[in-house]
Image 1 (cartoon, rainbow, N blue to C red):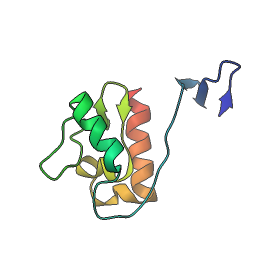
Image 2 (image 1 turned 90 degrees about the vertical axis):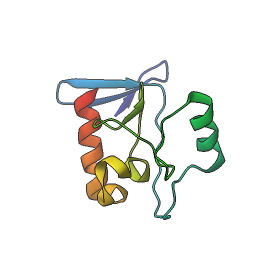
Image 3 (image 1 turned 180 degrees about the vertical axis):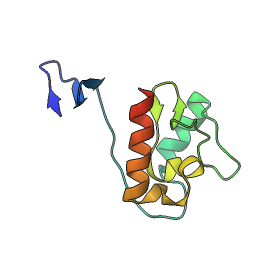
Image 4 (image 1 turned 60 degrees about the vertical axis):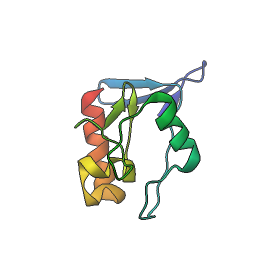
Length: 100
């Protein structure tokens, strides 16, 4: 990772680069959907699709809406029970990287 002068994060793998202005990293093992009230507000404000259990309905690339990808518990419906551990994080990262 490197940071350019205008505070844009650039992730480089081999010859590919992904540029972003922000990145959020989180982990945890609560049995319920994480995010609390701020995520609930975002779901309502942006009409993000959720299953009846409250978890996001995402694409195979883990995109919840354009340019919003999920990992960890929020990717559980697509990745499966391993979504919350290191193996699931690797699998999620691979899917996201392949799609951008």
